[in-house]
Image 1: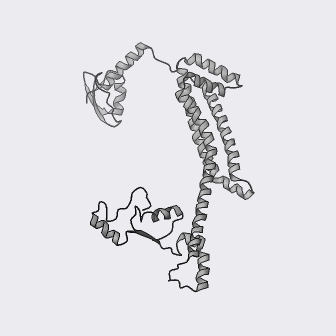
Image 2: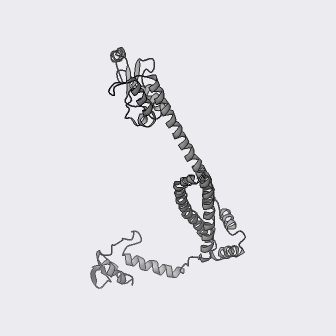
Image 3: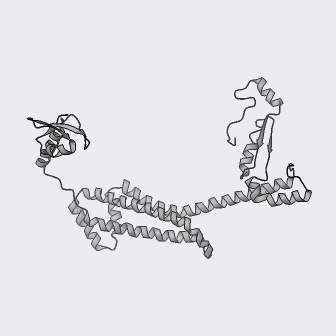
Length: 316
C-alpha cells in the first residue's frame, strides 16, 4: 500500500468515465490506517495515496493504546489525560496533545534507528579498510603476472635471507611451474586466513559492547582489537607461506615410452576404442570379462586385478 510510482485510479484500472465519476462523487479514495508506523515517512506515504492528480480523497488513522508504539512511548501521557478528564476506556479520544505525543514517540524511534545505523556503519568502516587491503592483494595476484608474485614473495621474505635463498632455489628447481604453484599457494593461504579473520571479527563485534560496563568506548575497543587481529593475520600468512615453500616439489613426469604403454593398457582395460569415452562401473556391478579364450562373470571390484594385467577386458 505504501508503494510509490503508481496512482490508484478511481473506478478501477481501466475505468470508464461513468465509473470514474461515480467514485469521485462518493468522495474518491479513502485510506484507513489501523495503526501508526514507527516511521512518519510510512504514514505520509499512505496519506499520499489518496487525493492525487486533483482527485478527491481522505485519510483517517486509528490508534489503540495496546499498539506497541503507544505502549512503549506514550501510554503514561494518555493515561494521565484519561484520568484527568475521566474518559471511559471504550470512548475514542480526539485530542491534539495525543497526536503530538504520538509524533514525538515516532521521532524518538527514528532517532534511535538512525543512531543504530550510524553505529553499524562505523563498525563496518573499520572492517572495510582491512577488506580493501586483502582484496587489493588478491586482485594483484589473480590478474598480475610474475611481477606480482615476485613482489608478494619479496614482501614476505623481507629481512629473511634464509627464505629469500629458498625462493631462489625453488625457482631453479621448478622452472616455469614455480609461479603457477606459488600463486595458488598464496591465494589459498590468503583465503583461508581471511575467512578465519572474518569469524574472529564477528565474534569481537558481538562481545565488545560488554566493555561499555568498564567505561570504555566499544567502537574504540573494536578498532584496537581489530587492528591486533589483522596484524596477527599478516604474521600467520607469512609464517604459513614460509613453512610450505621449502616443501614444494616439481611433479615427476614419466618417460614418453612409459606413458604410451600405460595409456594403451588403460585403453584395453576399459574395453573401449579411442573414439568412445571410458565407462565407469560401480564396485558391486557384475561385469563379464574375457581374455580371448575364456569368459568370467564377477563383481567389478574383483575383476579390477585381472583388468590391470592388460590381458583381460570387459565385454558387458
